Amino acid sequence: MKGFFYFLVLISFFSLSSLASEKCFESKSGYILKQKEITQKEYVCSIEFQEKIFYVSKKCFDQKKSLPCAHGFQEPIKVMEIKGLLGEFGSPGFKICYELKGEPQIFTFKSAISNEVEETDRCLFKNGEWLEIPLLVERYKGKLKNLD
Image 1 (cartoon, rainbow, N blue to C red):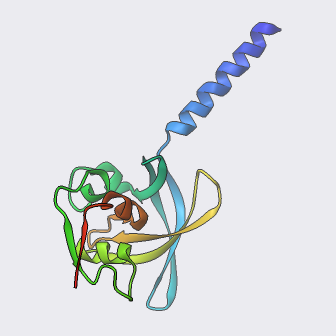
Image 2 (cartoon, rainbow, N blue to C red):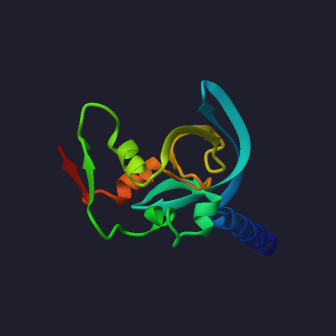
């Protein structure tokens, strides 16, 4: 009986380990485009940075070293200078996104981690790749200069 219990514990451990190592998941996502809600299925990947979980597109997850995705995975080399960074209009995260030639977008998806619908901001690039804006803000902390 004791051996069977240890067997169950071992099976449970390996099952949980494989779930924890799973980084990408299919999700129903949504966003607003021209005042219309668009929903679609897409692969969303979770990454950890500074002990926080952030989300990126599967394309960015697979192409960590290529621009524009590298902005979410590598330490910025240069200081980013943004006119009106601390201005009255627009968030610093959206301004970082524009500087990287992306389009900020409010985005919802069903998280495989919490099994809840989550809402966040993402920086969407022309090629369909995207990075969560809070990730960009974390990456560029200390590497931003306000130009007025």
